Amino acid sequence: MSVLDRARDLLGRELTAYGVTVRITEVEAYGGVTDPASHAYTRTARSEIMYGPPWRLYVYRIHGHHCANIVTGPSEQAAAVLLRAGEVIDGLELARERRGEVAHEALGRGPGNLARALGITLADLDTDVRMGPAVVLGDRQSDVAVSEGPRVGVRRAADRPWRLWATGDPTVSAYRRHARAESSEESAG
DNA sequence: CATACGATTGACT
DNA sequence: GTCAATCGTATGG
Image (cartoon, rainbow, N blue to C red):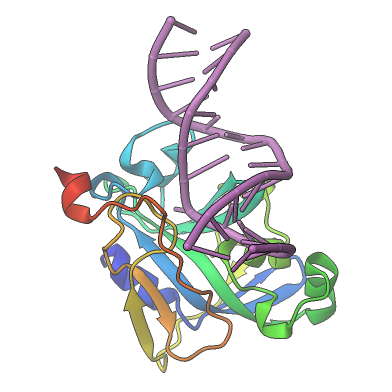
């Protein structure tokens, strides 16, 4: 199963962490060693986890925010799927405590906000989402209409349509292109 | 050791 | 559309 298939597979699933459950509505695929936009494109201490077994959380910090990925494997490819948005369907009070006074559909909108609503931090790095107990991924959903487009905020490989979201869902984040985005062709050559 | 930067976000023009 | 907060990484001396 390719990383794109895995990304599509994750849409619509429930994810529970620290008392809050969301339905995943937006993800991005990162292809690892063949994807200039992936943190695993260069193998470093940070990206090492993506060269390991699948179903584990890759959590990183950027600009003071946490972002959560699920490693997809195979290990030699070092691919992962970034969780970008979700609709809070349980634990609403906890999510509100963590996120403050924002609209319901914005509680888990954007990767930083989603991780915040779920209480996911660097402490969850390397957690297997099939095992729990802190973070648990639900079963596959089959009835999800999916749209696709370029990934948000990436500088390299900015035109690959590897951002997938539930069509028409109000919790999906807005597209923002990197100010100095390069095309796939530029970064490949 | 120093420095530049980003898979972000919220506020602002 | 623009800008800055903010800090762990990556990279170079």
